[in-house]
Length: 131
Image 1 (spheres, rainbow, N blue to C red):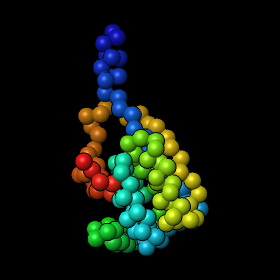
Image 2 (spheres, one colour):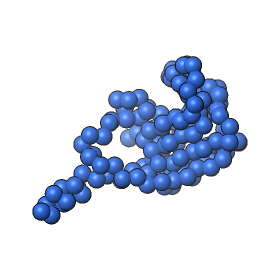
Image 3 (cartoon, rainbow, N blue to C red):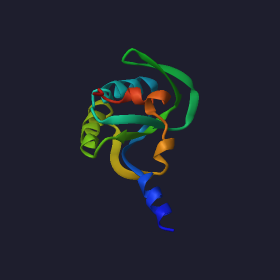
Image 4 (cartoon, helix red, strand yellow):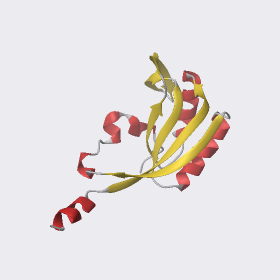
């Protein structure tokens, strides 16, 4: 009876996200500048853009073309640990002085074996240098 519960615990993984919210929606140029700056931050595993849908807009992020399909109102950034959030705060304050806050949250992800590899989806390439 309890062996199922033990198995479920083994398949649980925790991850930390820094949620960056902005006071205004970011345009393509500002988003590109921010992403270039975030590439220098070690410990970023992936980035998800959130905001209202727009016509697809191609932006250049350090020589890599990315199609932006939303006006960025917030970023969910998966990070290795909480100290990375302080580096993200510094970058946001430098590049986008209108940012409002960086909040750190810890989430539990079930079924670790079904987790999508960030490098396959393209979001992994937005992280800092990998070893």
